[in-house]
Image (cartoon, rainbow, N blue to C red; front, side, top):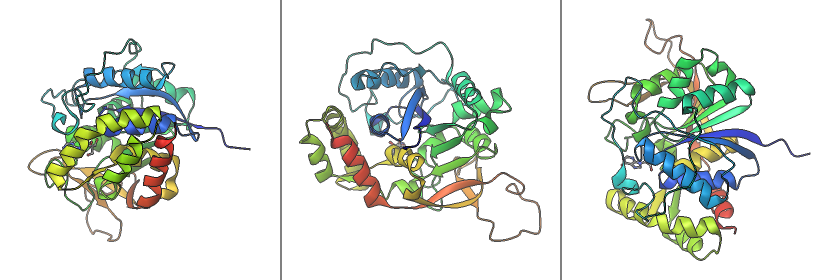
Amino acid sequence: MAAEPKKIIIDTDPGIDDAMAIFLALRSPEVQVIGLTTIYGNVYTTLATRNALHLLEVAGRTDIPVAEGSHVTLTKGTKLRVADFVHGADGLGNQNFPPPEGKPIEDSAAAFLVQQAKLDPGEVTVVALGPLTNIALAIQLDPDFAKNIGQIVILGGAFAVNGNVNPAAEANIFGDPDAADVVFTSGADILTVGINVTHQVVLTGSDREKLASSNGKFAQYLTKILDLYFSYHHEAYNTDGVYLHDPTAFLAAVDPTLVTCMEGSVRVQTSGITRGLTILYNKQKRFGEITEWSNKPTVKVAVTVDAPRVVKMIMDRLVES
Ligand SMILES: O=c1[nH]cnc2c1ncn2[C@@H]1O[C@H](CO)[C@@H](O)[C@H]1O
């Protein structure tokens, strides 16, 4: 008998690769998407909510609730960095889609996360695709959240490689380093997939052509919005291909055998020129003194990925009509 689908909540800032991950999730029999929560990152939170509702309408899945997340960082910062130069002013490749008809639910993202984790302790997975503010707020709102939530799979960090905002920091961690440090040290069951891994998972120009020639609804939609993402990657990285950040993190939540991990404590630099830097203590040295990593709960950090298998899964599920 097939296992019950895993309940997941996607915390998202859509976002072109977020749209891919959401559609992929809706095509994945291993999971049941029980909600989307929104956050700033690729766009501001208001637009993230609008895009989340829009994507569910495109998919014909308006039964899935959307809970709006924080408009400010954990420390109430309002100077947010949004990546409209990557995703377009509308977050979805400047396609001028009509506004959604639906509305978010009354509960905030953090309240929704707390409530769902409590309803089904140990059974809900959060796939966090943006800055970690909502997750940190949930941890602060309910001391049992870290214990109640099944697993938190994070797209975030740059472990022993350069960042994508600057040489130190990856965009999601840079978006709210204080929140990230709260989440990594919370004791929850955490798997983080950083750009050290996602930069190995590339959708090529010829993959995009395959999507374009499929009659599938998602394939057609994604072909349109991917244009801008390709141009950005061409400019920034000189490649004819795009990094599949969010879909890779989602698939790691579905099938952990797609990645291999190291386990240790992760701390985040919250100030100075390396703000947003993620450092994993790999436990190989027993330090003679107490450090900021000592006695912190451990998390899993993805270090290798079966990129061909990930790309194939993404293509198979999105090309299908
Ligand atoms: O150069 C960049 N600056 C900011 N965000 C980026 C950049 N490149 C990609 N992303 C976005 O940030 C997440 C991965 O870090 C992904 O959502 C990706 O689309």
